[in-house]
Length: 621
Image (cartoon, rainbow, N blue to C red; front, side, top):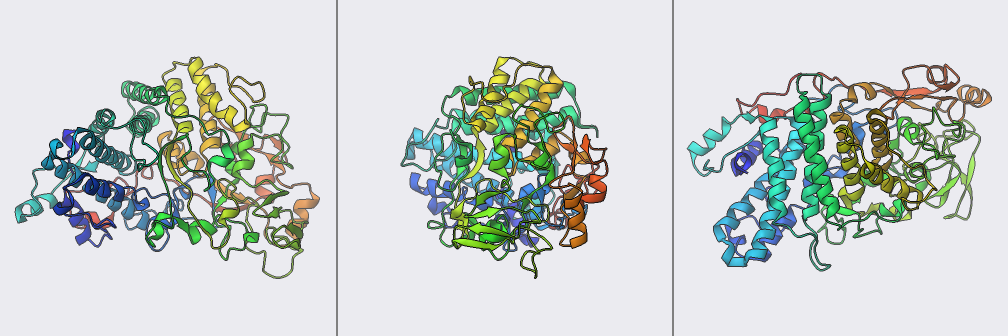
């Protein structure tokens, strides 16, 4: 992989000089040449690359000040009436998440390159061919993943040749003058690298081995990367579209996904809800999964979920001191299909007053269904439900999960502003002391199936294998096999219809897995959906809430239109119900801002621009 053979230590040194907070030593301190002499020492360095801060998604995986989770960048998410700089139009190069994503990714590339350089110097004969290939394959795989991430977030990237000697003043001065390389050229090197490492990696690891990169992971991450940029080549309107390149890259994505499927190494977990619990380990669906462990964390908070990374997702009656700030949006609630396979604006089964009835089972697995037990307490945000039964206390308790005016005091002021609470992956293991360790799923088999289907759809090569891939995922949600007639089976249809189906399926299947923002960016629909408002229920006020209830507006008094991307369109007249519901009854909690002229790329960190004069900022920043 000539063009991205290495990103030398000088680049991380540059960022360190510019006040970037880089920890260049892994926890085991295996960072010097003396630590690159045995297979065990190389493995310790590989293990350092599986620390969670190298794959940041959750709030506590960025910096000590929490920051955000990647779902917060999307239309699936609300945080009361608060927006972040990614969603309020104020994103710039000083943003801590932007800087940390840039820094930690180049830090990871630097570590990969050190492993690769030292391994070549040591030679295959010193540790044996099998160990040599496995270590080399893992380091090159992680590096390809890191470059893929940079390309997706920042566009053109900085690439440094191996011949720059960072130990000399001349080498350091040369590094300061580096420029960014064209994303499309680097993309080809990344895709080639994923292909190249397949022969170096195992299909699987034994139960006693650390589960690192595999052939399936290489195929799957190549599919994700190719599909991302194929979509941009097809849907971009700023000058990046290229029909021939789009078709070629969709073909690469389809082939890579199919190669992963043909390994026969993965199956869908039989129970969708169970898959995301912290008690579920080593699922046959996991392709690239990083385990969390508090016991083995060495008191490093990045290695498990704790604090607000955990409690922010919980309801008021969970007992957490800070909670209900990470909530599913009404947009997400409305996207789930009905059990007849139709969207809510077309299905006769949908009742907006009972939004969970007759819906795809993944809705109730993702968002807590009203009137059901959650964390040992009935969850019900209805304004007239002032008490609920708590199994934990064995009695009726004040319903602080409802912002009802009927409850005196302030105990319920911060109940979910839109009435929705996250359910996916959360069970009573999340309660006090509010420290949990679910596996981090970077890539799972359902995603590969849907990527395969999407790539084939965009190639207009729609055959039974496309329907089978989608139906496998959908049938699992219903707890049945694809051959069953107990779920809404997908059958071959025209390209536009199939596109809507697979986009909707991805949103239902992958909600709150920190992938939605990549779909919004690559499909180039963020400019539409991210400029909508976040809606919620009336605040704690008797007049407002009584009007809402007395006029039969609970839970929603209208059915929004669902567009060709499977998204509710609140900007047009509702498909059914009260025409003024979203203007006169529902409360606008906040209004998202997305500038298509610049926000499809993140800004280059200011700390980097300050010290590297030939690094140009991204357009609009």
